[in-house]
Structures are given as structure tokens and as C-alpha cells.
Amino acid sequence: MRAHIALLALAIMFSSIAARPAQGKKDYLSDTEADKIREATTPSAKIILFVTFADDRVAKLKYSLAHPNNDRRRAEQLNALINAYTGCIDDAADIIDVARERQQDIRVGLKTMTAKAKEHLAYLQELQKSGAELDSYKETLDDAVEATQDALTDAEKAEKDISAPVRRKQ
Image 1 (cartoon, one colour):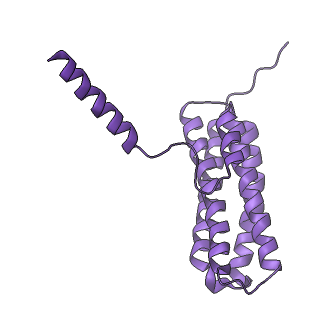
Image 2 (cartoon, rainbow, N blue to C red; image 1 turned 180 degrees about the horizontal axis):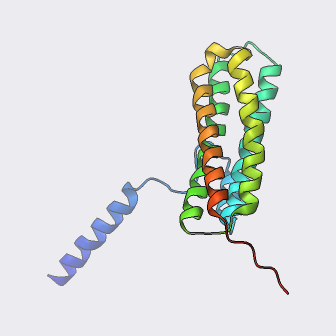
């Protein structure tokens, strides 16, 4: 009877493990980028990485828009770049929220996030006004602008919450 219960428990355990989706890698990150995020030891380092990856997506978007082609999947590719940017910015904002709740020092990450997100927001808002092929990615672009604005708001709140001065060695 004990062996039967033990086998049943093992079967349940293995079936629940198999049913779980793979964790860790986001679909918009390369394997190398996902590894870098996993290996980052501080929230600030993770924020900087996600902002760097977002910056890379913006650079690729700029290049793609400056070099039009007749690819049938062009709209899909542009939307994928914008969605990947949004995912990176959202993940950075999520890390800010968690680090703020845990009162972790994320000053360096916040500084990077604020500077780059302002640059990205200006570019994305310019695209909203006069972007090439705007009809093919307008909704995705609107989401990206909103995500960037939300991330900037989160970063500004976190900067205000971090009011304790950093102690210096004497």
C-alpha cells in the first residue's frame, strides 16, 4: 500500500512539472539576453540590461523605417520590434516596482531608465505624428508610448521614495 501511494505521489509530481511552461526566457529576448538577465545580481543591473535591450529595439526600428523594403511581413516585423521594446520597458518597470517595495538601492538603474526612456518617448511620439507606414503599427506604437510614460512615472516615484542618503566611507 505504501509503495502504491509513493508511486501515485511521484506520478502527480512529475505530471505537474511537465504541465508547467518553461520559465525564464521571454519570447522577445534572445538566449544571450535572457542569460544576461538571469546572471545579473542586482535589480539595478537588471533594469540597466532591460533598458539597453529596449534601446537596441529602438535602434533596429529606426534602421528598419529608414530602409523600406517590399517584404510581405514588413508590418509584422515592425510590430514585433515595437512589442519587444514594450516588453523590455515593462519588465524594467516591474523590477523598479519590486525593488522599491523591498527598499533596494536602484539609483543607477533609475538614472539610466529615466534618461533613456525620455529619449525613447520623444522618438516614439514623433513616430505617432509622422512615422513612415504608421497605419501598419499605430496600435502597437500607442501601447509602446503608454508603457514608456508609465515606466517614467514609476521611475520618478521610485526616485522620490529613495530619500535616504547613501552612506559614504569615512
